[in-house]
Amino acid sequence: MRRKMAAGNWKMNGSRAALSELEAIAALSADFDVDTLICPPALYVSEALGQASGTSLHIGAQDCHFETSGAHTGDISAAMIVDLGATHVILGHSERRADHGEDSEHVREKARAALGAGLTAIICVGESEDQRLAKNTLDIIGGQLATSVPDVSTAANTIIAYEPVWAIGTGRTATTIEIDEVHDFIRGRLIHRFGDDGQGMRLLYGGSVKPTNAAEIFATDNVDGALVGGASLKAEDFVPIIRALAAS
Ligand code: PEP
Image 1 (spheres, helix red, strand yellow):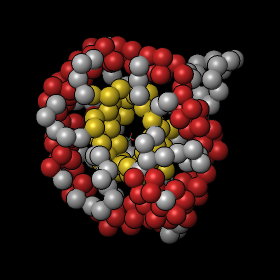
Image 2 (image 1 turned 135 degrees about the horizontal axis):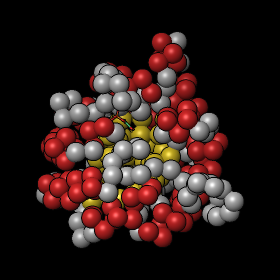
Image 3 (image 1 turned 90 degrees about the vertical axis):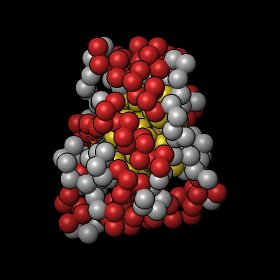
Image 4 (image 1 turned 180 degrees about the vertical axis):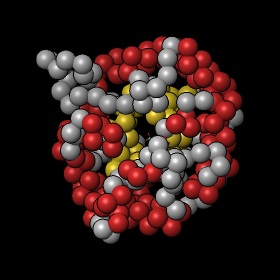
């Protein structure tokens, strides 16, 4: 049985004052039997951990370098994230792939570093609109999965997020038929490669998940939760999503 997860990616949003939302998210979701996670900007991880202390809300980071230390101005290592007490890191988000030229090899090296440091990696895959229109979605996802997910991944340390690039931050959500097809495909690939661990790895959907569409998405096979951007910034949006997940 895979434990459900609602993960929030704050991207480059928020402020110290906005961290008070974490208290509200933690308090209002305490009774739901799902894992909850917020990944604020790296500068706020430490203070976010303080806000979440004593609650079941997990705090993670949005990226890490693949080296453990060294001359990498502006970067943070997996060990630093662990040092603060955070537990998860998002890797291979399409905005990192697009804005920072990260390819799947980079993502795999980052994932290796994250898992080696003891973090849980949320590895993102997803096709662009052009790739979907060209009917290449499953080839793209298959390639990203094969290269981005390291051999050392297990059900306990790796979560896969399927995020169609055209659905991120656009208000356009994949249909449940599209989500079902891709999640089934990912599950098949993971079982083929990792056996029981592939069966146990959690699959999150991401791309304009909102309180109004969450229940329908969570009713889809092989959807174990969501990676949520915009709607994770406010408790009033994120908590109904968590509630829908718990009820699914
Ligand atoms: C994301 O940032 O991973 C994401 C899915 O964003 P949004 O929910 O805003 O589409």
